[in-house]
Image 1 (tube, rainbow, N blue to C red):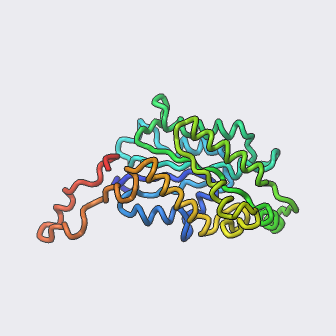
Image 2 (image 1 turned 180 degrees about the vertical axis):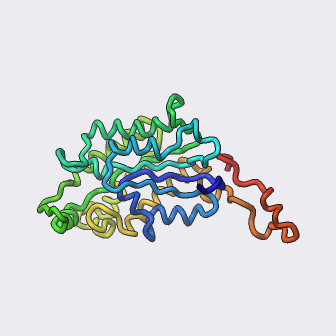
Image 3 (image 1 turned 30 degrees about the vertical axis):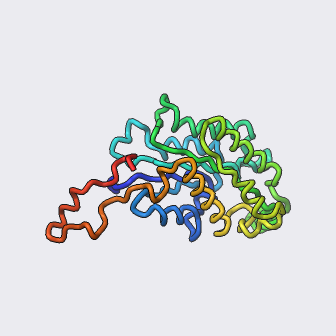
Length: 261
């Protein structure tokens, strides 16, 4: 296992998070802007919903009793809802009230002092599901191993989950990015125009991820300015400060101390 050098950002979500390591994805863009500052950990799980995320998160986030020599999670993004919002009866469907409860539980696992996973140094941002393009998605479903002719998702139902995520953010005191509204406005309020931002009606194109990245960085600057890239210290000194006569002195230089930047 790699030794501790710097703290990290943890991206928790479904396939939209898992796939964000592609060029232009938020994982890729964050890794670039936080080089030698914060490691970006992608914990996206394709097909997962907020219900299944809870036992996974219990393993993904170290308990406070085991965290002394581990990097701090300075920022946690929680991005579920796209799968929760499939039609009732679908394998991935989670009823709306439970979805809200699940998001609250994930937040409280980090914020509650009585939680085994309490992490007061961790800042949290919720992300709502973006709208679905049912025209694209229905076309994609017709090509699957078990094809179907109609979409198992709707714009209207997805919006109710996005609205619920925003309300959870207000309730739990954490910012929630309204990606549904952001994408809808960028598409001029026309579902068919979403194809610029969605590759198959559900997953994001590079342009879609750019919308998310820009909104996320704006949120960080506004809500957690101490986590702006220019405010986070760099691990190890600049090369020009290396003592060429005794370069081993570099090892005595302090790293970025935990949660101090």
